Length: 154
Ligand code: DQA
Image (cartoon, rainbow, N blue to C red; front, side, top):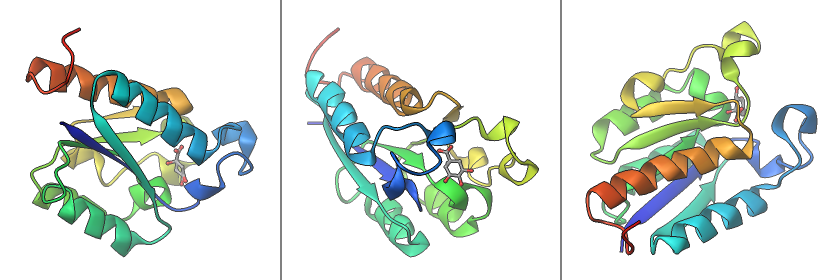
């Protein structure tokens, strides 16, 4: 069975109450459930992990291959803009990563415009709220399907 890891960075545990005008009112648990349900429709296993700690995210990325993950969907949150450690971890491992953001980082404060991880990911989806994650999952599912690695043929 194919496996997808969804990694959420700092402060995303507060989704639902954190600046809802920017990030929406859906909680992280809701997002995790929606993603898991969609993946399950294709017989794909999906796990979600949130951490406020850079090192924990680095550890998860490093171990993703050994833990059997085919893809990582990553919202590195604020680390997006300055964590060379997360960028290097992505570059070091053989697991493709899709970068997601709830908000459109390119239309917000200047310091959010640059992502240090963008150069080492498959692509970035930003600005669609929860649908950024759902769209990233659709990309992953299409790729798994093309590789004959989903449980169903759509
Ligand atoms: C975010 C955007 C980042 O700039 C911010 O630090 C976050 C969330 C987003 O999902 O829109 O924490 O990654």
